[in-house]
Image (cartoon, rainbow, N blue to C red; front, side, top):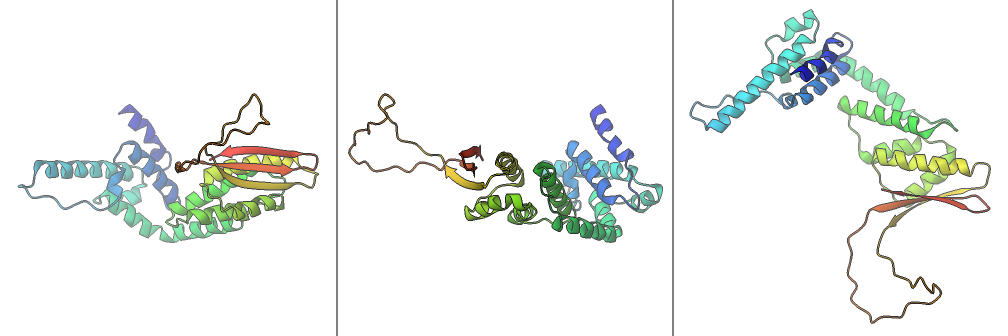
Length: 264
């Protein structure tokens, strides 16, 4: 119980007013999720079962009703007095829906500003790639909170389009090899590519990104590597399950090739 009370302080420190609905709603979700009652926000209260309904059904309804009351009290307690009066007799789901209507214009303005910042976000040449990509991920997640969830491939395209010219060869090879990553995976690949690009700075380097599949390799006689292994009778080849892809990043720097393998 003490842990629940300590976590609820984030709501008392950020009470709902006329300007902070999005931040307040995020904090409410954190608290209700921690207390395992966030499901009451998924929809209105179900209809009360008949007295003759099975005990399991009646118990489930009672738990839902109790959790709904607790969530409502938590939310109303974290509002200004004026907003408290408007929501005293509402359930948790109805409270959120009513607040969305009240602050819809505010949400639309925030969505406009967020999408504008996201679609115009460009990484400066020479700037570190990690903070830039993390910023884009944050903007994408913020839009999702506002009800505008974008496709995963579009998210990756936005990151690639925002990179400077030094990553142009990386982007071209990424597209040619039809690679697919989540945003965190793409961040890791870009951090590795950034290191290789810096190593080859000042040279006529070409960055190559390829996708490999790990499979079973043929064994060689290590005592005499030049000797080819004896041919064995042909046997029906059995297909092996696909292995996770490896991303090989190479940079041709004139005198040699720098390479790094990143496993997905």
